[in-house]
Image (tube, rainbow over all chains, first blue to last red):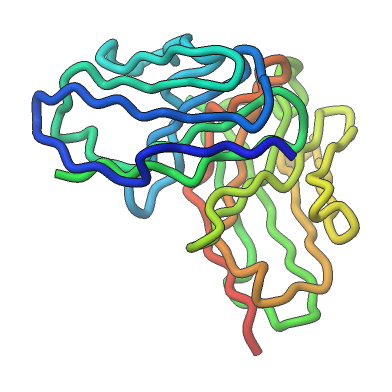
Length: 106
Length: 120
């Protein structure tokens, strides 16, 4: 299985900060990388698919980049509603696997 | 608006079978371009993809669970189901159903999730 490793596991930030989360795959996965946001008690919500494509309805302050093994999710200016846990997921070949999550805290 | 809703027992005894159903509204489960999937979330292990089923009943499973899992589809009811056999405490998790993109394999609509506890 392809292992996905996120860093950091948690971070503290303030409203208005620029935040970057990284995700590393254990082998090259091209651009088959997706990002999700999850709030407590809720299902994950897709933000970015195919490494850099913004899902419909997701604010433009979210962006994704990377290819191969190294990827990042950037929030250009943190809003209060962005405090949540973020997961990456590869979609290169089954079984699809997720990173362990990055919790963004105030 | 596509909506998914999981249903099934919240408590299952060890060695018994876990059965969950996902009811889809706002989209036909028979439509192409998507598949229907189950994902679970352990408190410690995180998110784990279980498997998916296509509208034609073709399936793909996570090898780690393949010997114990069946996912089926009922197009007449717009539902799909998960059966996980011979459960243990390690199967305690929140179970989500979701819609997956057939080509890019990301999950765009999810159910709210249902907690299944394995305990005697």
